[in-house]
Length: 141
Image 1 (tube, rainbow, N blue to C red):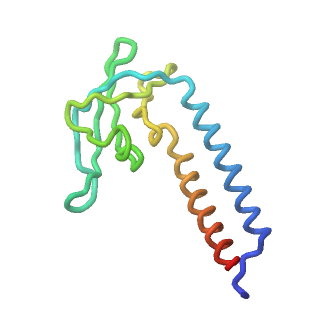
Image 2 (image 1 turned 135 degrees about the vertical axis):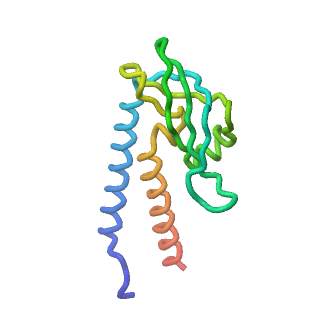
């Protein structure tokens, strides 16, 4: 029992993780408020890294905003693969979130692309709280 983590330390880490998650969601949300969605077309697909059978690819998307054409280089995240961007091929139509202030600033219109930091801290929070919950249940036995 000498390896026990003090409850105060667990509580502080929990509060810190929750506060960081709340602030990252708010920060990323305010950055996405002024964007609008336009349709883009995948014009280039390149493998990025990985072995045989790897699905890691980089996409070049062409979109039109305010009468001008722009290109966006993007990759799919894990959440994108599981959801609406599961099959991106040459010529596919994809939603692109474009900044109203600067049409050249854009990203794929997906949760993974709009909230990457929040998604990372959210995943860490789920893992942390799962481990703490498991430890608490194990201790009660």
